Length: 157
Image (tube, rainbow, N blue to C red; front, side, top):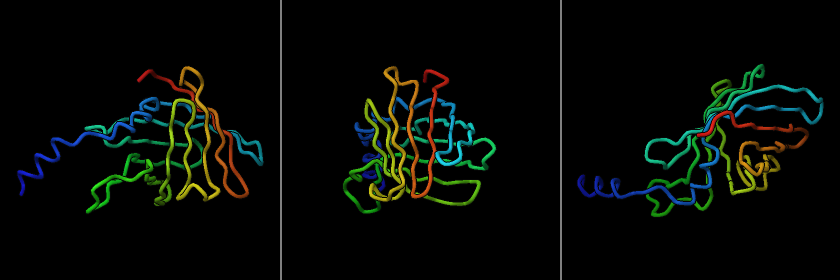
């Protein structure tokens, strides 16, 4: 049995649909502007593939806001399941508060969108890539608030 499991894990390859996330790999400077107050603050995101490429690790920090955490993004394949989830799922672990949230992601050549918990939650980021994929401009909205976000890539990974 152990040999069969070993052979199966050696043969497993990442889902090719994950390639849409490649353009995120690298470090991004963030500029936020609160939609209600106009307050501005900065931050940084770093995306990198975990070994074997099944999951993308995303580290996030908002300077001066005490928001810091890590998200693991990929297709879920739950215990006992034969196939992965239809949606790309992100699990956010916020080290500044101990919170854990689940996001649904969609990334294509023109946009990056993610929703908190479900696509109909009313809490989502919707962003658009520049033509060279070095800038993402968008808005994070939730009932009663949100902010504009501009992400600028600082390296060419």
